[in-house]
Amino acid sequence: MSDKMLGIEVNSQKMDYIRKVNREEKSNAYLYPHDTDNLVLIVPSGIPSRTKYNEILKPSLIVVWAVATVIVAFIRFICNQIRKSDQNLVQSSFLGMSFNSPTSSATENLLLWYFGTLLLGIFLSSSMYQGFIVSQGIFPINSVKDLEISGLDVWLPMHSQSVEYFFENISHELNLKFAMPYEISDMIQNRNTNTAYVIRESKFNILFSNDKDHWHVIERFGYEHLSYKIHLLSAIEHRMNDLIQRCVNHGIVQYLVEKNKRLLTGIDQRDQPKHDRVNVEPLSISDMRSAFFLFAFGLILSAATFLAEKLYFAKFQCKSGRFGH
Image (tube, rainbow, N blue to C red; front, side, top):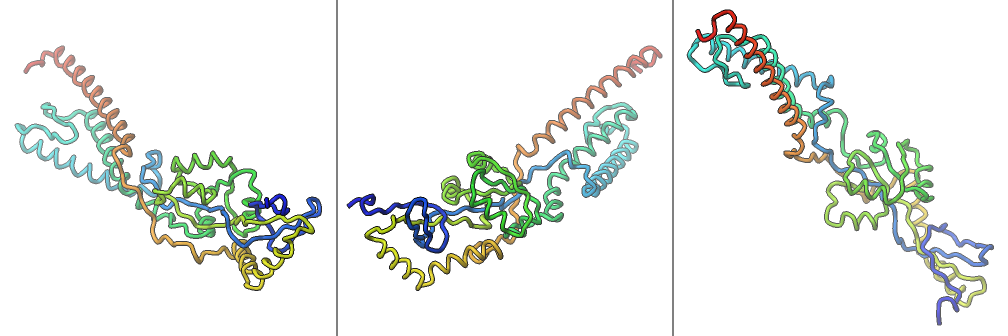
């Protein structure tokens, strides 16, 4: 006998936890206490190690530049002392000073000082920047409260009533943004690790079945329960009443009610794993690409300036009759 003849219709949708009469469809809806799927709130479990070079001059990194300046000044002092003590010694090859002229010109000193300090500052900030951002308030996010404090944007799928219902009824103030579900999936796959996302757990498990180290689930909510819609006066209505009554007697339905109450008020964190540290991704060669281009540009500019200066002084010495002496 088919389900249609029995008058039973199965729907996967979020239902109330009590017997519900739908007069428009002239049917009774019964909740079957079994979770089918739920939504998860995921946050990045690590922070990228790529240095933001436009932030090298932040006040918090003044100490880095101060140390770099002192180191370069000390090395320059040592090089000058060596040059004065032994004129036959090839002039300080450090930082490209391999010219055999008796003294270095002002332009040469200025440019070498600038690019040497800049290069050393970039390398120091690349390795120390991670320590600074961790010490300035970036900590593991293990709860919605932590997410609120972090100030991360939370991307929610559009046209999802259960998601909107959940975030409208929690006491935390989050930076909510909306996008289509497929756009959120693309953002997660591209590892935009400065944002939190809401996605279906089944889809999350499919996307990251072998790689879940970059994302941490801090909340599961929006449970969708399997429900049966039975037409009034159906032959199996009494059987369903008996089944639901047994579930009520065993406390299953009440358990689900209390679970949703905890989610909306206290945020249930009992089953969630805790992260006690922030994972920092190791530096790679690609992370230093900007520093390499900047240093290469500096060397080219420095070489061009040195060449122009040498040609100018050579021309001046030729006119004065001192060329070749």
